[in-house]
Length: 228
Figure 1: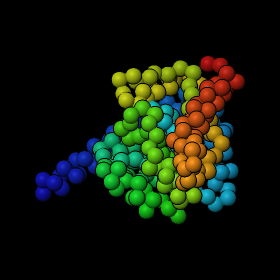
Figure 2: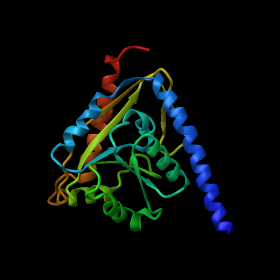
Figure 3: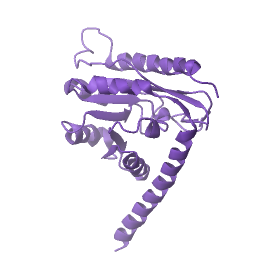
Figure 4: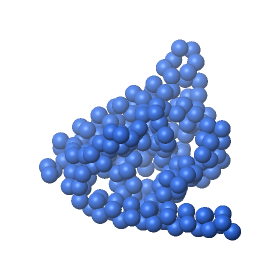
């Protein structure tokens, strides 16, 4: 009985925290001056029937909840209290969360493949999540993407005024109300699972260069937007 009550209390706490966060995000997003037209590139990437894995840095994910609304993506997170809160927020914005086992290295990526293969056109994943280190790319996700023919779409986010939470491992960025926010989508990446052989550039380096490029691209979009 005690375990059952703990589960109920946890579910209630998850719903409460997620509800507050969703309300804040919705109000906050209405104040932003947004440049999100490049998100339409994701639809072009999916047009040939291939699955697309949209990748971004963990510290940039918060604005994507409201700004990418309508993309019906599967969002990958971890089965923990925080992950469940993120999952509830995803549902409120029209995304479908997939909670991987906490032991992600042993069971997570096979579970990811089992749950989304053939059932999702667009998958969203923080490359260095859920616990870092900062900007360390998880090679397992790249290897599975290559083996299963999933193409990668790098996502960059930039804002004109923001708070950077430097005490967090991911240096999470929180764009301030009434700031300008731009979302960039880079060229899609078709990874070959043999790319690490024969002295070719490692997959991680290919993706890192693409992430650096799309972050610069997002910052370059800001000057052309209406001023605050």
